[in-house]
Amino acid sequence: MPGMARREGNGGLLYTARLAVSPSALITDAVMFEISPASHLPKAAQYEELVAQARALLAGETDWIANAANFSAFVFHSLSDLNWAGFYFHDGRELVVGPFQGKPACVRIALGKGVCGTAAQTRQTQVVRDVHEFPGHIACDSASQSEIVVPLVAPDGTLIGVWDVDSPVVARFDAEDAKGMEALCAVFIEAALPRAS
Ligand code: SME
Image (tube, rainbow, N blue to C red):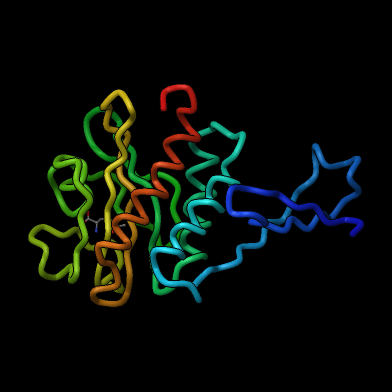
């Protein structure tokens, strides 16, 4: 169909890109991506689909900020019941907020502090059923009731930062979300460090 283009990935058709311009103008003009949530699927299958979509979304781009921004928007608009989704990157000393979707958030978090700092320090995914029960939880948005934070570690063991997702629903995240979010984060790391993984 004229004016339409398709991007294929491991999972088949992932995005329909509606081109607002003629194909000859593709290099400089915008392409609009449509996210097609797979919320009708069981959670594990939904994450498989999201992983394939994330691969297609980040394919060929290694710029960290660009990928982090698109990754945040992609996850935020693909999953239900989220009020914040984004990155904190390690600057060598502490965590500093990166691209995200949601309300403005606290900028710096020390390693070991809050859910993010705990994930960064322990290098273990934190699934917090109720943020009010997590000692030292840092409240950036009073709507947040539950949270999941995945540590981002480069193949050489360097701490990159964390991926943080908040929900206004208690017990929004479980072990399947942890596995799925970790798989999504692996796609982000792989896109940014293609030769190291
Ligand atoms: N709740 C996090 C702080 C970051 S915000 O959720 C965006 C924490 O306790 O580390």
